[in-house]
Length: 262
Image (cartoon, rainbow, N blue to C red):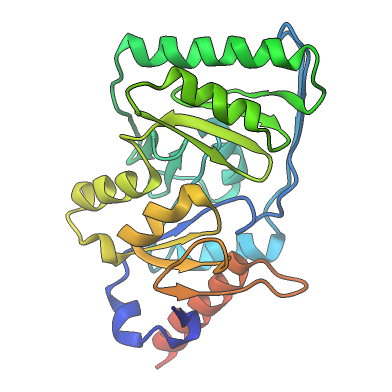
């Protein structure tokens, strides 16, 4: 891996899309979620984008398309990016399962057996939740199951017990587990996006810091902000006052503005 500052001008000139992961990349990790047992009450609190980063996004929009890829749901991504939202913005939610692009929603099709399996896993987790305070609740999702909890072998083993076909992933997110189909990953979504835009995947700059970002960093021109956890072609590390994605945005804005001035 090389430091992101070693990206050449020739490489930057080919970039058509810049993709930002969310948690731990452009907003601090630390979502608070609490759901009651019957699911009738849900409290959720997350962080927001910094003002400086939003202003950088407004500048970057003039030179590249912006994409936000996350395990979060599509409404959260829309809310997070509301200030810069338009039809040029791309949102990829639920680990690539939902893509908003050019005013359209694109998503894969799964058989009923897939949704039944997720439903049964959720019901069994809810049984554990009744007696185990380490499980805080479920984040609303359509195509994947996300449980907020401590790291628990019980949940990992439960998913394995339902997955004789080996079709599911169960990924630790630092705040819980994402459970979904291995057929669709953030990397697959980046490949599909490249085909849609008729460009090479390497013309899409991708960022990430966690296990669900691994394929995305490999498929695109990957910049990891946590090189000890996931690899990328390049790396950037957070400083005391800025997250890795924010540092990268500073770098990109400076490049485009200086290029224009020249």
